[in-house]
Structure formats: structure tokens, C-alpha cells
Length: 366
Image (cartoon, rainbow, N blue to C red):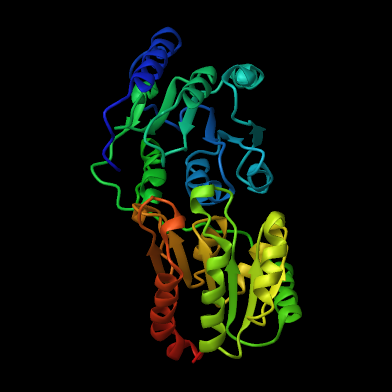
């Protein structure tokens, strides 16, 4: 984890607020680990953020659900990732929560309290502090066993803190949340096992064939829901031109959010590419059947990692712990400021050349 800056006055006030909440509503500071098979337990896993964040957590959720047949595992989701959460067969119920003004969460707190949870797990491990929103969600669950990664500001809310001496990849921190259940980090492959049927594969093949029959198939994703992960759209033009120059027979698909569809279509024409607006199932199908994915750090790179599709990942400065998990390919990092604004087209094109030189001959691309 990154070293924290000295807390500001505002952060100190927030910390004092969280400390007061824990003292009033938190119960015992520490809770010993029980025999999880001795009786039924109701578990809440908090993952009210992005779709990719939930995808990379799904194998931990699966592993926890398999510890005891008497577990009931519920999931607290954001509106964005709730549909994916409902697709997971080992999840009992999805509770949707939109973060915003703190007191607007009162109905959610009441709903959590009514379910009488035994365990609440903070899945938001990639941020440097346990904020007041998460603190209130954990406490409102009424859970005796509140599990989370220690060493962050306001971690006193955890009655079962999990200590990690080093985090080489942020997936390690998610996996560590399963330690209190007796699950070891080396017990399985933690890449997301996304469901992918013959029908899904046929959908992917249909979309690629609609775009063109050439190989390799290159998916270029323009969009990210987070502004600091958004690479300026115009900088994709030299990258697309180089892709077409190096791989004249390739089929290139450009995906984007609706707001960038017009820009995607403008980029597509000179590169002899096709711009698609896709639903999540279509994006999953196209990504899984691609030969190469070029994208900022988003759910698309998580999907590519799950299916072992090579990735050229565009990353912000200081985010080496967030590179696609156990996926072939490479990452290229921006500079100051720590957003993708500082990443030049020249650096990305150079990284593409290196990746093509590395993978192209063996895979029959060049």
C-alpha cells in the first residue's frame, strides 16, 4: 500500500467521527474467530463500487460461500454492478446502495439492521481509508464479526482486522479477506471464472464477423467511468494507425460509452475499424473472443484477464499494483499528474510495438 500523507484537519475530524461511531455502536473491539460450521451464519459483503471491482472479487465470494452449506451470503452493490451481482449463483440477495449524502443511506442502514447479519466484510480494499460511508454500513449491519484490511485510516471499525505485511497486487488484499474463514491465498486461481456459454461465444463470433473476418481481432476500448482513467480520445488515432500498419489484415473493433460514440466512429474510418456500442453481455463476448485488448484499467481489462486474452493496459502513475491480474501482455504507465492525461501517444505506440514483437510471431499475427 502507499504511504499515507499526514492527516489534514478535515481528515482528523472525520476520523474522530468514525471513532465515536465505533465506540457507541461497535461492540467489542475484537471478536474471536468461531467455528463457522457450528451453526448458520448470515454474511454481508460490501462491494458498492464498479463492475470490474465486483468481478475481481467474485472468486473470493465463491470461496467464502463454499466454507459451509449453512452460510447465507448477501451482497451490497452499487446500481452499476448490481445486475452482475444478481448473476452470481452463490449470492443469496443483492442489496442496492447508491453512495451520496450520508443521511440518504438511512433506509439502507435500516434494511441491513433488519437482516441481523453475523458477519460484514469490507470489500473496498483499494482505498487508503475506511470512510464514514463504509463505517456506517458495517455498523448498521449489526454484525459481530466485521472483517477488513488493517493498516488504513479508521480501521478500528474492524473487529476482525486482517494484517498484510506486503501487497504485491491489490487482488492479494481481496483474497486476504477470506483468511478468517480458513481460506489460504495459494488455495486456488483467483482470476474471475466468468460464465461463458456456447451461446455467449456464438454472440462474440457473430459480432466479430460483422466487423470483418480478419485476424488478429483487436478490441480498442476508449472509455472509462473514472475520469482519471480516461485517456484523451484523440490520442488513440496514432495507436490505431500503428495497429493497422503492423497488422494490415486485422479486424479492429472500437468500443466506447454512448457519449464517445461519435468520436469512436471518427477514429474508426481512417483505421478501417468498426465502432460498436455494446451492452455488457456483448462487451464480454467480444472481449473473450478477441486476440488482443487495448484499454484503460476498466472492467474490460478484468474480462480479458479472466479469459487470458493479451492486454495492452493504459495505467495511471503509481498503479502498478492494479495491472491486469495474471494476464499476458504489458502495461504502460502515465506520468504526472497521476492520471492518463500525461500518457503520450508515442509511449503507447512504442509499447504496442514491443507487445507485437513479443507475441506476434508465435501467434501468427505477423
